Amino acid sequence: LLQSRPANTVVALVADHGMEGVNKVVTINTVLQRAGLLVLDDQGRVDLSRTRAVYPAVNNAYILINSQDRRGGIVRPEERAGVIAVIRRALEEVRDGGRQVVTAIFDAETQGEALGIGGEAGGDVYLDLLPGYDFDARLGASEVIVPREPFGTHVFNPQRMSMRTIMVLNGPGVAAGRRLDEVRTIDFAPTLADLVGIPAPRHATGRVLREVLSR
Figure 1 (cartoon, rainbow, N blue to C red):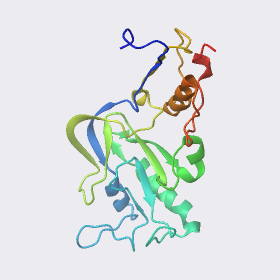
Figure 2 (figure 1 turned 135 degrees about the vertical axis):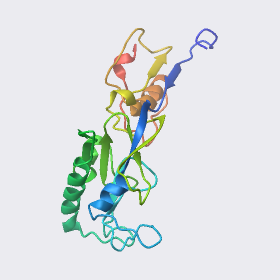
Figure 3 (figure 1 turned 180 degrees about the vertical axis):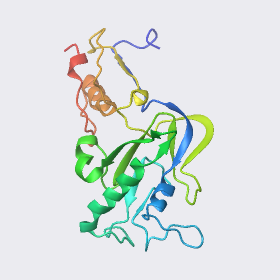
């Protein structure tokens, strides 16, 4: 492709995430249920009238607090900190062979802006797990740690080495032989737009990687 491209053409390559192998899952809703934060009805469905926190089926590594600003929510604003504390204690107690499985817990309200998490479409409490473990959103599981067939996945803290990906730029305006370590996927669009001389996308939040430009 590089050899046959037309003159004055930039080739840009990016992938959205890395991959990591896992062979066990953590049933987060079982943890919440045992802590008294999640209540199921007689059909095994979430009873929102008695549930304070739930790990949703979308499986995006976050817990939702059933706050009063949600339809049918019951957690008052002044109760949020207490619910977070119970969530944190319950997750920190999850062990497998003596090892702590939940390795990080982030509150989107206090850490969201710095980490790029939360927001209207996001969660309230974000989690990270020990390598080899994945999240499981099932309801009513009898065990917290469940073995499964090995597979590859990526719903983890983007700072993990295994979640890092690749970005390559080549062509007019790109300095040859430059390698950068601190690059984010969100920097791709504004940098490429700058290279080809068009405005950055309206909602782009990354920066132009000027250190790789030859001009």
